[in-house]
Length: 134
Image 1 (spheres, rainbow, N blue to C red):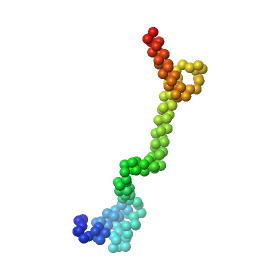
Image 2 (image 1 turned 135 degrees about the horizontal axis):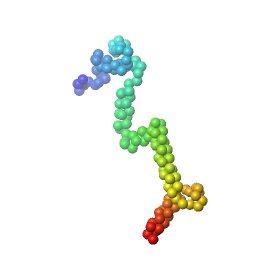
Image 3 (image 1 turned 90 degrees about the horizontal axis):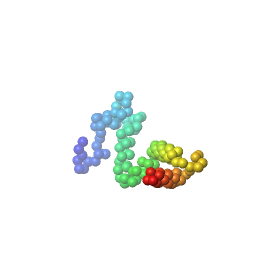
Image 4 (image 1 turned 60 degrees about the vertical axis):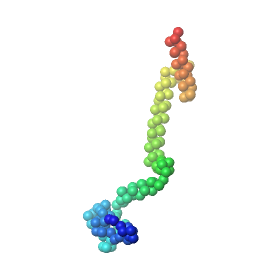
């Protein structure tokens, strides 16, 4: 509907079709109009589209960094991130365990830190290169 320059959207009375669209998400098949004493708050089911639009409008004025910060602050995001991090750390530790099995040490079951495993692997690789060169 087009507005005149001196009219605002608030000044306009809703038409029957606009009223029906307001209550169409309520279900039950009964439409209430404002003239019948109905109000916009009678709908028992929340309107997901409206709440989603409101959230989008709220986030539009924020900077990209602030939107990212707010998204990361949700419990759902934190639990998903924690799960991804746990999987990554487990894979990382398994890779170190496999590398540790390939390295000769005395005693063979000696516990080594990650940096010790890396340093020992470097030394062992250079030793093997030396053996191949001779």
